[in-house]
Amino acid sequence: MEGQSVTKVVLLSCGSFNPITNMHLRMFELARDHLEDTGQYKVVKGIISPVGDGYKKKGLIDAYHRQEMAKLATENSDWITVDTWESLQPVWVETVKVVRHHYNEMLAAEQKNDDVDTVKYAKKRRIEGNYFEDSSHDKRRGGPQLMLLCGADILESFGIPNLWKQDDIAEIVGRYGLVCITRSGNDPHKCIHQSEILWKYRKNIQVVQEWVTNEISATHVRRALRRGRSVRYLLPDAVVHYIQEHDLYSAESEQKNADVVLAPLQKYTGASSS
Amino acid sequence: MATRRVPLVLLACGSFNPITNQHMRLFELARDHMHSTGQYQVVGGIVSPVSDGYGKQGLVLAKHRIAMAKLALQSSDWVKVDEWESQQPDWTETVVTMRYHYGRILEQFEQRTVPGPQLKLLCGADFLDTFKIPGLWRDDHVQEVAGRFGFVCVSRGGLEPERAVHESDTLSRHSQNIFLVREWVKNATSATEVRRALRRGMSVKYLIPDSVIEYIHQHNLYTEDSERRNEGTVLRPLAKQAQQPVKSLDD
Image (tube, rainbow over all chains, first blue to last red):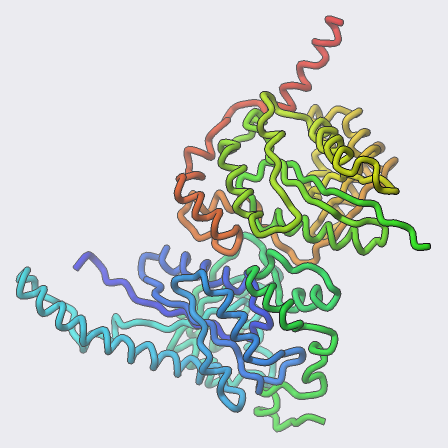
């Protein structure tokens, strides 16, 4: 085979996507360029996993719409897809569970491909008589990786009390890996330095510098929409049309869950809505 | 009776090398802002790419820049690309381009409306700073653009445009004709960055429309070679201004 083997990577992005914006999509592109530039990785798939309604975030509109918009936004991408497993769960699902779920799915898909490949490679060996070094027991070592794609604000959120379980952070970063896109005003390196867990697994954290400041936050988009302002060119056209057609994002929609405690906080502190 | 709104056309002059989502955002932001003043009704937008004669480093052929702008604006129902400026034999001063388009607008409206239509120059905050560069603008031109037409200037949240107006006597004199629009979302998608990414084989998806990306790849625009175009050439406006004093001596 040609030189050193390249690790296949699937990028998973979890979030509200309320709504999805060009910035969310840019993150995938930036991450892929960065990883492939190292020469060690080949990014084969991107997954957008919108959070379920059970997250209870203020202003979070129906998962159905958020899924549909994400699908419209990725229509023109040949590698980024939307997955609805998380959003279809009846209650909020911890990120680590979403990561595990998609990792298992990825392995299952690899296994299927392997079965096909084994036949192909066997044939190849017969034809070319080359010694085929790679075998199934090596799979785990050079096997495909699932990495969580996120912004630097997520890294910072690891420090917010009761938002994350420490074990979950350790598993996500330790067993899987993080690709973190910087944002102006956040310093991911400082964040890593100041956290014992992150520091321990710093080799598994890829920090991608975004030189073109692109802070199209969904919050800003919702605000513009409430005020009847244009959001064209901040989101894909198809998403803008969808929002207009369904009249999403008003002052009313922003009040949803206003008096409800965010699901993770509820879970870890036992707090409940008033 | 409610006062009638002034019909307004926004004109953006620039390299558009290439056109980006940020360029198109400027129009959207400007339109929203001018509508919200209650005094204007934005009836059209014009993208006017500069001619090859401008001599800016890295400027690819006007025919490509026009084609890309057309692709990008295909889905817009109010902003159009205009080729007049790019077709002129020499680089055209901004005020000359404005006079041309204003003449056409007047023809279009045939004095039917009261109040009559207006044309304003749409630009980013960095544009106002260019007035300070010696030899780049003629004083009487700045006077005409600011006084007769006006600006709609979109900035990214800082106070730079206010300062630029403050530091120029001409601009300050016409500050009521200068509309400052703030974009609170920092979006620094400059064409320079897009070209840089393309040179390095990095993705520019979601920064510029897909159709423009396709066009760029089809025609292999924006390489290290293309960025060196016009290297060492004096920018046409500076060359032209430098010639003026000699001309008047002969008169």
